[in-house]
Length: 268
Image 1 (cartoon, rainbow, N blue to C red):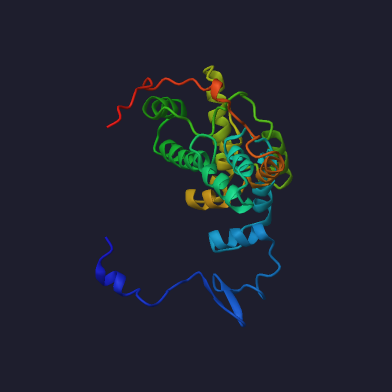
Image 2 (cartoon, rainbow, N blue to C red):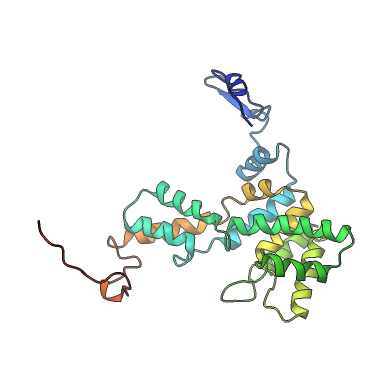
C-alpha cells in the first residue's frame, strides 16, 4: 500500500529510468541518446525498445508487424472500425475518431484482450503439463471451469485466412521451431479430434510466437497496440466524405421499442 511518506518522496521531482527531454540539447530514451544512438531504428523497433528495454530481434518485429498488415481490414462493419466510421459521419476530428476506435480494440473476444488471455493460457497450460497433467485432461478441465477459449474459434468462419501468410513468413524467418507453437497446434489437433469448432485463429498463433519469444502478457499487449490501425483510416475518411449521418443510419420505423408504454403527464 502506498502511504503518505512514500508519496512525499516523489513530491516536486520525477524519478525515472525511462528517459527525459532536454529542449535544445538532447532527448534520453531508456538511457540512450534518442537522436544519436537510436536514430537508425524504424518506428516499430523504437516502440519495441520502449516496451522491452532492449533491442528486439528484427525477425520478431517483422513477423508481428506483418500481422498488422494482415489484420487491417477497411471494413466499417467491424466493431472498432465502426466507431471510426460513426465518428466520421458526425464530423469528429480524425484523432478523436481513431483514438476511440483504438480504445475499444481491447475487446475481450475479438481484440487485444483476447491475445492477452491467450498468451496467459499458453503459459499456464505449459506449467500444468510440466507438473504432470495431460493435455486432454487440462483442456477439458479448463473448458468446464472457464468456458471461453481464447485464441480458438472464430465467428462466421472456422478458418482464418491470415494464418497461412503468417506461418509462411515465420518459416522464412526461422521462427517455427518453438515449443509453444507446437503446443498451439497440439491443442488445435485435440479440438479437431473431439469435433469442437475451436480451430486456431491468428490470436492464438501470434500468442504462441510471443510465448516462444519470452514476452510477458503486458509486453505482448502493448506491442500489438496498433494492429488494426491501418484499416481504421479508410473507414473514417469514407464516412466523413458522405453526407452527415449517412453511415449506418437507422430509421425510427426500424426500431423495435419494448419499454414502458406512452403515458400522459398531468399538468399542475
